Image (tube, rainbow, N blue to C red; front, side, top):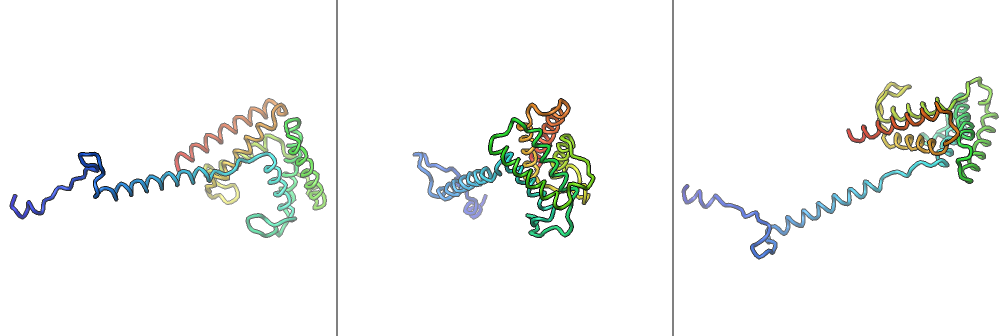
Length: 222
């Protein structure tokens, strides 16, 4: 190796500490950057944990169903579009009213005082609104508990992108909405104890296990 090559060939000492244990000056800046990076990662993780949405409880579920009825009847604007429906969807409104009536029957004895009162008031209100709009006389069959549970499970699978949307045929991904619907099924499991037939109870448990497994799979793959 020539003298010039020796001058150009330099070995950089990458040791972070001197022999006496003190931090080398040329690595102090790098260490500071590493600490800042680690702090940033911790803050990011904490922020992500803080973004977990509040769990769905029975009262919020009831209010959501009542709101849905009023939107379908054209009484209030759609919460997403801010506009009222041009044409009332009486059949869908009646089905949602029937669901609330079904919940009154299937949750009997399992509700807290304020939940029971809210359900009674909500049901009375939407039935009156439905009757005035003609939603009580459209000839649609009443919803049963099994079809209601299967409907919620189908919503979850659509929102997880596992099956196409039944109306548009498109695949959508709404993971947070799927989680909330799964929470609804969990609430139903807790609030219907002792009021379901053997077949209904078995279906609810199987459906809940299935959608929870599907949710975990989608989250792990994302």
